[in-house]
Length: 284
Image 1 (cartoon, rainbow, N blue to C red):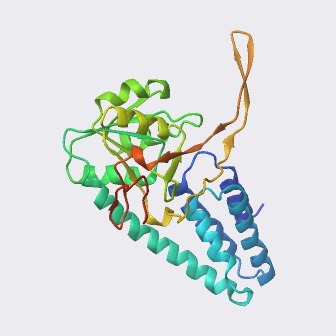
Image 2: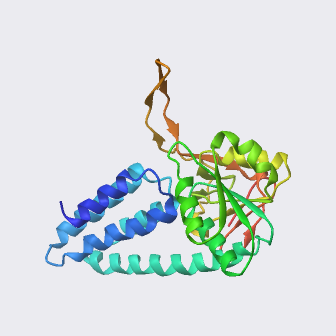
Image 3: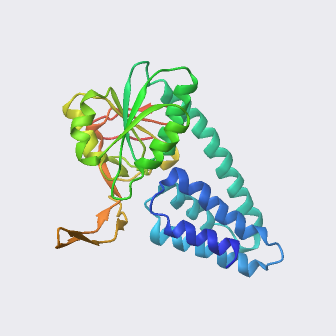
């Protein structure tokens, strides 16, 4: 199997990563499609089309990936190789610039002595926490395990590697663990006019934080915004069998993402600024 095919298959089978991790992987796929210059333009066209089909059929809930696919669809056949490279370069440059500004802005919301609560392994939130650490701020983090896939484990490991004080808690203890936290920081896969989407469990966290009067902020690039009120369909983890004390139980398929209404949050931190809900809506 060629490099392009391997990377495309890896992208298709990744059920753990959010768009912060998937975008670099997607760009690697497109770079691999370009690498073999001896291939004819027809092969390149087929490879790009395969990438677009994958994103549209299986990964369209990731707004940043969906926007890349839309750009690719507009490339004329006779300019495919040239414009594909331009798109890759532009996405990489813009992404790095936006993330740097997002990290700077987000770190301002973390203060000495605070306990931050988060879920999953958002690259945006990890970057904000890293930036606050480099600024000499003394804080600690509580991260939920983030079932069913357990992405919180990766966040825990990455925070511990950079000497940020961190503890991981099981999802069933979120209600108890959140009480002594000072701020909630979560990522987003999609930002729309009425809600944002993120890892399953985000709605529960926002609801509990609202009850305990703990501020909730979303950290995400503005590229994740869609000017729509529509609800997006999200992929799920397949059903599986659970043999508990000889009791044969089937666990129903569980969505990996859910939507959270803006009335439960204080604002969305982007590289452009902080957007606060007005009448339950946000426009970026």
